[in-house]
Amino acid sequence: MPQRPADRYGDRPFDRRWLIPIIVIAVVLAGLGGLAMLRIADQGVQWGMITFDTSGQDEATARIEVTRSPDTAVTCELEAVDARQIIVGQTAVDVPTGGDRTVVLDVEIPLQGDAAAVKIVTCRRQ
Image 1 (cartoon, helix red, strand yellow):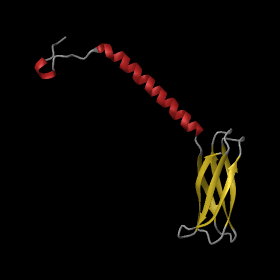
Image 2 (cartoon, helix red, strand yellow):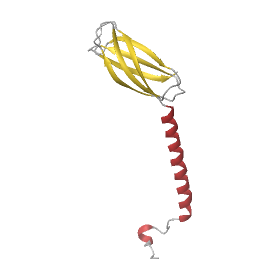
Image 3 (cartoon, helix red, strand yellow):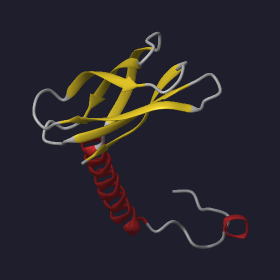
């Protein structure tokens, strides 16, 4: 094995006895991180707006999709807003436990003005 120039690289060669413990620690940390990410992803609640209709005088309607664990009850809050983003209606809808992981709901929002859009404020576990 050729010698390294000590004046250029120093006189301490790499100590290989630390290589295996470093690799083991890196693999364990990566595994724990992956398990934590899977656990967080499994417990989370995801939601999205499929469609909404604001043409009604007294109410707006929305179709939303909620994905959660079937044993998790969820409450979603929706708002109807006018063209200036002022809230003209709001409601909350409960998604009970059971059923499929992904649930599609039709929601009616009572209005107190002309709505231009409907948005989901939040969906959270009960």
